[in-house]
Amino acid sequence: MNKEVKVADNAYWVGYVDDRKVPFHRLTLEKGTTYNSYLLKTEKATVIDTVDISFGKVFIDKLSEYIDPTEIKYIVINHVEPDHSGGLPALANKAKDAVIVTTELGAKELKEMYRLHDREFLIIKDGDKLDIGGKQLIFFETPYLHTEETMITYCIEDKTLYPCDIFSSHVATYELFNDLATEDITEDFEVYYQLIMHPHRPYVQDMIEKITNLEIEIIAPSHGYILRDNPQKYIDIYDRMSKPATEEKRALILYSTMTGNTRNIAKELRKGLEEKAIDTKVINIKKNVDIDEIKQEIENSDAIFFGSSTRYADMVGGLEEVLKELARMDLSDKLGIAFGSYGWSGEAVEVINDYLKDSNLKVVDSSLIIKSTGMDDLKFPIRIKFSPGEAESQDLKESAYVVGDLLLA
Ligand SMILES: Cc1cc2nc3c(=O)[nH]c(=O)nc-3n(C[C@H](O)[C@H](O)[C@H](O)COP(=O)(O)O)c2cc1C
Image (cartoon, rainbow, N blue to C red; front, side, top):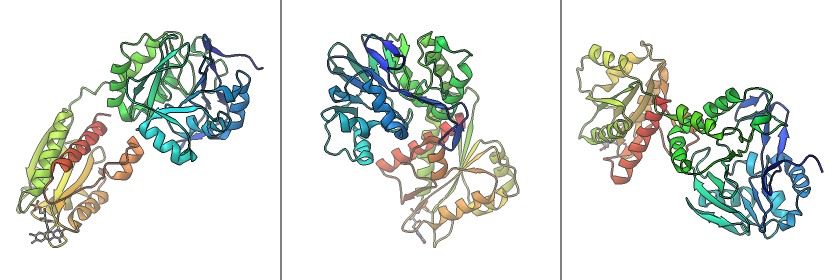
C-alpha cells in the first residue's frame, strides 16, 4: 500500500494527482490538478465523488488498497461532471449493490451519461440526512456551483465538509493538506474561484448561508488542497469575493411598439433589473426621435436593451434610426440585448441583433450566456409572442437577472 492519506477517523483520500498540464474548460491547467475522492470506511462504507473519467482503473486500484470495492454501500455524487463522476462506471461495476446518492437532476444526468438506468438511486433534497453506520451525512443542494444539479455533503461526526468543486484549487499537490503546502495557496484558490465560481456568485452567497451554522474543521474539496488549517479563511474569501459590487450600474431599455406588447416586455425587464439594484431607464422610441439625446443616454448606460415588435417582417417606430448610429459609437464596455414581441415570425428581433453585432457592443446572446454561466435555459435575443403571460414574465425577469449579474461581475 502507498502512504495512507487519512482525512479524519475512518475517512481516507482515494483520489488521483494529475501532474500533467491538464486541458480543462478551454484552459490549460499549468500546475495540473488533483481529483479528490474520499472513502468513509463505516459500517455502510461510502465513497464521496470519484476521479476523472480517464483514471477509472487507477481509482479502483487505489480504493482497493483500503477496502474490497464490492463492500461499498453508498456512492455519493455531489456533481456529475466527468472529472468527478468519471470513476462511477468502474466503481458501480464492482460495487454492484451500492446505492448512488445524488440530486434528482444529478440522477437523471448520470443515468443517461453512464447508462445506469438499472441502478438504485437515493434522491437527495436540501437538508436530507443519511446514516452510514458510525457517521451521519447531511446534504445541501448548491445549484450552479458548479452546474445546476450540484450538492455538497457534510459529515456531522468528523465536522468535515465535502463541497466538490466549491473551495477547490487546480494544483497537482502530493502534500494534499494546506498546512503541508510549501508555498502560499491563496492565489491559486482565488484564481479558481474567479474562473469557476464567480460567474455564479449569487449562488455562492446562498451556499454560504446554508453552511454558516455548520461546525467545519476540514473542507475536503474535489480539486487541490484539503483545507484543515483555518478553513474559515477560505469561506471568508468566497464570501468577500461573491458580495455584489457596490459601484452603481445603469441599464437603458429602448423600444418601439404598435399596440404596447413590447412595452409590456420592457416593463418586466425593468422589474428584474431593479431587483438586482440596476438603475434602469425605459424610453419609447417614436418616429422623429431626438437622436443626440438618445446617444447620450446610451453613453451613460452599462447595458442597453433594444426592442421592437415585428410589422411585415420589419421593425416599427424610430428604433432603426437609433440602431444606425451604433456602428459609429465606441460601446466596447457595454452590453447590448435585442428583444421584441411578435406574432408568427419575429424578424425584427433578428434585424436588431444584426445591428448590435455590427457595433462593438458586447452582444448578449444564448452562446455568451452558456459560455459565461453554463446556463442553457434562457434564450437571448429575447422574443415573446404577443404580450408576456405569467410564465413569460418570470422568464423575462430571469433574463434581466442574468444581465444584471453580468453587469455586477
Ligand atoms: C400590420 C401588422 C403586421 C404584422 N406583421 C408581422 C410579421 O410580419 N411577423 C410577425 O411575427 N408578427 C407580425 N405582426 C404581429 C405583431 O408583431 C404582434 O401583434 C406583436 O405582439 C405586436 O407588438 P407591439 O404591440 O409591441 O407592437 C403584425 C401585426 C400587425 C398589426
